[in-house]
Length: 71
Image (cartoon, rainbow, N blue to C red):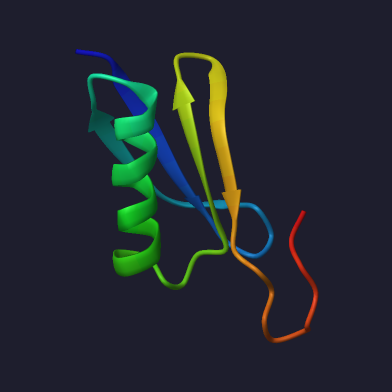
């Protein structure tokens, strides 16, 4: 089963936490990472999923305090 690394990033794009996810497909890894991001990691601004040396998924939360949208 493929292994994915999920990084939770703060407002300065520094890694605040890392979680290993075992999933049969990228879509499963994305769903599990987003669930963790939205429910269990509210202090982080974005999440990235990596498989080996390749970033396979970026996700950024809106910056609600400033009214800006993250790219």
